[in-house]
Amino acid sequence: MKNILFVSLYSLILTFSSIINAADKTEIDIKVKSTLSKFKNKIGGARTFLKKAEGVLVFPDVIKAGFGIGGEYGEGALLIKGKTVQYYSTAAASIGFQFGAQQKSVIIVFLQKKALEKFRKSDGWEAGVDGSVALIELGAGKAIDSTTHNKPIVGFIFGNKGLMYNLTLEGSKFSKIVR
Image: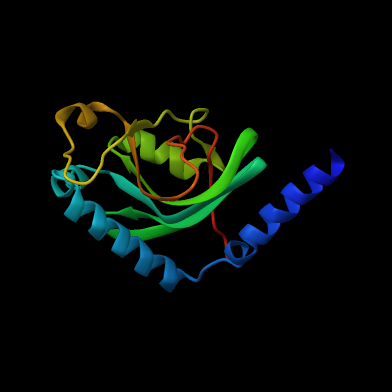
């Protein structure tokens, strides 16, 4: 059993070793801009919806891997009025039946100023604990409807690639990147 645990942890370390070397701000900004562009072009109503946002947190590449023990990590930026104001990382860990890896993009939209301020003042904000995120499942060709407009925080996960499927933000921790 110890050998399986060791192999699992070692696999995760190898998987995340390239990620742990944090991307520079320019690289994050380019990926964030590209992710927002894809979101706006593929989802009907996204442009109008984002105009109502107090802030938008974008993680272009969140990588999740697991073999019994799992983890995920990604870096992104918080934009207010289209300008980057802070860089963030997201991380989560899980134990249970899981095997594989996936890459996804995550966009979290703060529609209420109070929710955005609480997020910005926090030191390690956790989805589901420090704030409830209404997760909206959308595929290409679908549109954002009016029910998403009355929630304080709305999250979108898209671009899933890989062999693992898990549409959740529960337990994900978001922390400021300090350089």
